[in-house]
Image 1 (cartoon, rainbow, N blue to C red):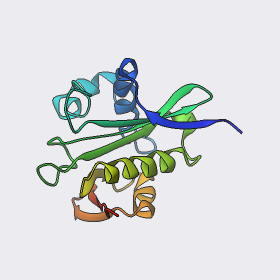
Image 2: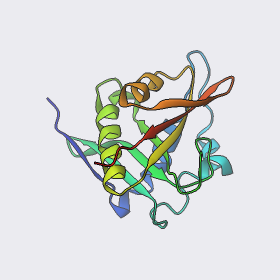
Image 3: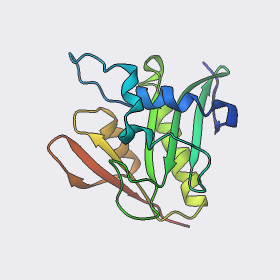
Image 4: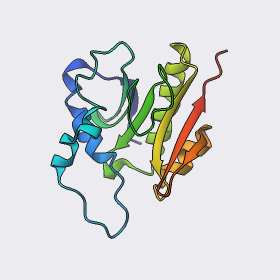
Length: 161
């Protein structure tokens, strides 16, 4: 069994968020992947530009046998998943070879605990309807708040114990 460690991102690893941003782009079966340069688009850069410089930036990484293979990060931003001022939006992704093994679920669980500890009342995200990650979000307790033709806007209400 490979050793999985979930931990906070280190400052020198922040450039990896560009990789994970690209990996987070849902590509339906049979559709060619967009060029990597797509992450330079302003509507995507909002997720990673100057990450770690804002008070609300949070990031956890999944490390398997010493290699960072996934990340979950939140920040308060005006993105696809934005629902209200002061409510962070969540992004999560894993390298393809590490998907479907429960790593994403574990990353998500740990991030929700971190947000609870830090006192956030809720967190939101946007997911394409065809994305298999939708089921993971539902199982974790996210609820559909709004729906477009292609996407769900989902929210998780954090119960502060």
